[in-house]
Figure 1 (cartoon, helix red, strand yellow):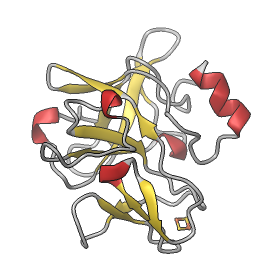
Figure 2: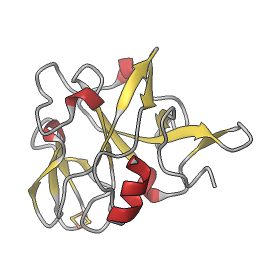
Figure 3: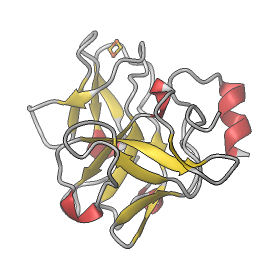
Length: 168
Ligand code: FES
């Protein structure tokens, strides 16, 4: 059903937690601290639905200062090479990955100490994760963040075949 469907082109990102849960994530309020978001789209009847019933749909969103985001981040799938979204399920065993206070854009997985660098395509910088967190392409419309395609690499919980079906 629509609430478990993965992020789709045209979905708008909404806060996944905190006082603004369910509210649109505004580009103007983002910072280099992680904001967790879910995609909000429409079901087959055209009703709005937050796709929050599949844990793989949770996203990590950041806005970095100009010049901070670097390859292998796909900069053309970011907003102004400053705002970027990644899947927030650890590629090791699917825990949610959070901020690591040791540096801007550094991420830490509490389950087995996996580490990622969100300023460099969420490449793995430590621990057991076998692959980067997948980047989700987005664009800005007004003050909203809008999904423009599927995850650019295979997310946790997807077989390669299933992922390839979505990027066709
Ligand atoms: Fe993240 Fe194991 S689930 S390091």
